[in-house]
Length: 262
Image (cartoon, rainbow, N blue to C red; front, side, top):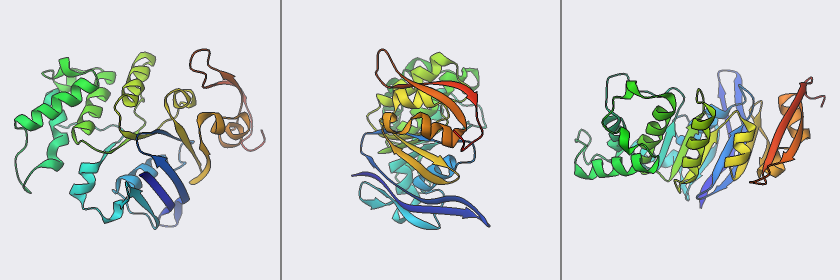
């Protein structure tokens, strides 16, 4: 059980975005989705979420094809936090998190926000350390606080799969570490698109590395984050050290090289 990607391909007009991507991700694991800009990370997350439809291939979640799920069922089981997701109207933090309960309405136009929904929302806020912010207005929060609240909104969906697209963008170092630490503690299968290789190494169980729409490496941080692979994909020279506490790889960069010549 978990997430299985089988030969996923996707194109827009004549431009191929993803090519034959396959991987198996165990239940409860945290996976880092890596690659340069334009590698296909955001597209792959949208295919996994069932928002976009692959040209070929399938996504399976806990034995069920995501493509066969209704929109409502997919929204119950999969939460996607995209970049720059923010409410367009003035809402309190609690109201923002309650938006995650929409897929659980009992009728098509049914209401939500009752005692049960509020209990789930407060539990989600508590899980990310944001319960004291419940009565604050969204616009008054810092970037790090907003990201925590958005994860709480996603968790209020009570998904079995959490997808995050660049969740650490625009956050300071302290907020990045706190956010990724909280994701690890949520006890849910998570896939995160990340740019920072050192953060991915520290907080992910396994990594998927995309380049030009192809999956060029997959495995543990030790297996994927090697000087040879990083040099070929990112065009930089680097050294790999061992973190003195965690033991995971730490990348130390040196001068850039021409891509593919490292």
